[in-house]
Image 1 (cartoon, rainbow, N blue to C red):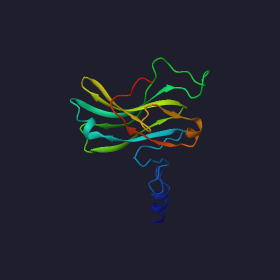
Image 2 (cartoon, rainbow, N blue to C red):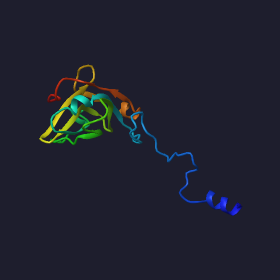
Image 3 (cartoon, rainbow, N blue to C red):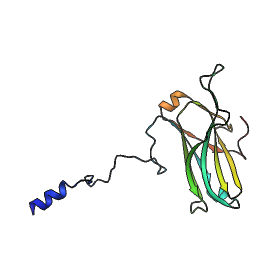
Length: 160
């Protein structure tokens, strides 16, 4: 009996029964980003965005559209910026609304949008802070892991 209990206690792969595998999750259920970052978070109306004809998915996207500071700025931007993709939701969605996030890890000026993928392309809804579509993210904000609450604006993001 004792040998059987000892064998179970020493069995590989057990985590002690507490269920903690060493990873943490955010309040939205997404895995927590271990790197310094700023998290943009905003309410996404999935009922509206998934209501577009042919909608298959909605995701949150951030794009770095500028540098902080006057020239010479401490960054360079590619002619075609790489979008940073955050959380995704499938359509149709059982949820009518969801707070969705996207993390950025470099300082700069960003535009954030909720993008609906349809059978014929994409549609986007711009998000911003205090009515502005371009939001500055500082190195200090990244180190502090700040969360920026973004709100939906009207239509797609304008050219920065």
